Length: 98
View 1: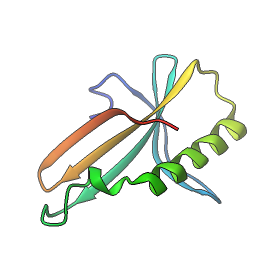
View 2 (view 1 turned 30 degrees about the vertical axis):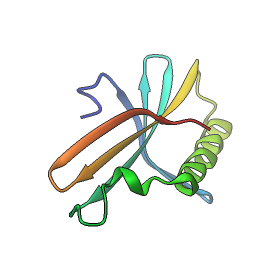
View 3 (view 1 turned 120 degrees about the vertical axis):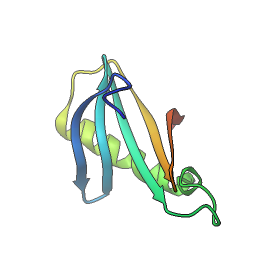
């Protein structure tokens, strides 16, 4: 899905003491941090709804750690979320800002 959207995957499951980022990709000169959430049923809401403010902050802290450690040559960054609820897959580009 990400490759079909024109993104080049740089790293999967980046972990540090602050947490984890599922996928780190490039969209040209933009570094994209991707959170992937799944839900098998819809009765408790969609997978996208699980990326609340606390989760966004955690992802942002891990992204800052990645930038400090790896020092990639990029012009910007963004946060995308892929939500998989039952059989429905949604890719939200620039899902949140920090």
